[in-house]
Length: 288
Image 1 (cartoon, rainbow, N blue to C red):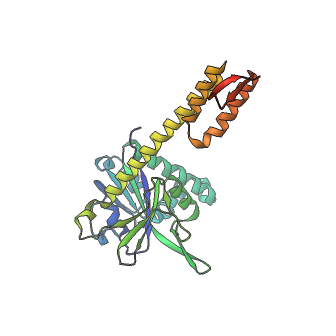
Image 2: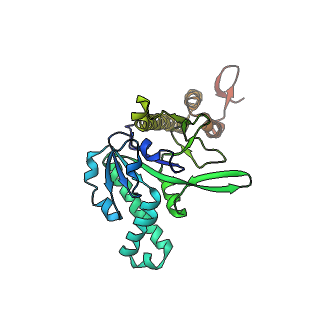
Image 3: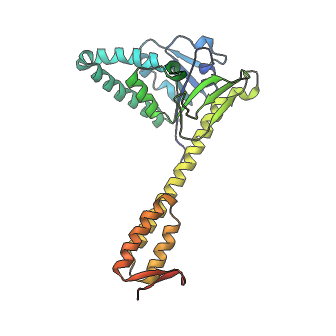
């Protein structure tokens, strides 16, 4: 399977360096919806905008870049896209649910267009904090339905925070204090200091690792599906002891989670033929 573009949702408290770290991605274009691009340590090319149309009108320009960064999700979806939806559709103007439905459809199409062009997408959000007893819970600061949308399409969701030694850590590993998502199973990643040469490609490396891990998992999943298909075809062809032995051999090559169900199918097929597995002989024989 070829590697595919990925979507990363990056969020954290103000001042932790979200925009700067996102800008270490490969050939980035930062869509500045919050007017805060000038605070970044590394400043990529910037599209300053004040409406959703400002963004979609530059879709062709985005072909020249490797990574598109939306900064921030709340401004783009809750402000720009809500204004666009209300202006575009009468039903959306009267009904918030209709508006969010239209926003979801439009944003999904925007992401699909970027993916079709082979672009990676980083969505930046501020962190919002709630209390659960004595615990603090952090999650992306985007209105409920918009947050559900970006969390659903994201391959990785990372919370950026400071570690005990003042280093920055990008948490992809979910715990009781943060919302996170780790499709690629990267775990938590320590971000190099801005003075470290490795910092310049920090996000590019994270994206490359994400793509590689997803590709590995996809290939493994396809191999597992092929093995299951082969086993099911072998079970369907069982007519005697040798073909039942072949089916059992095919089953052992399948993922462990599917073996029990496949053996049950084989047992049903062999029972109808009067066959029984002889452990001593290690093969199927006619039942006496």
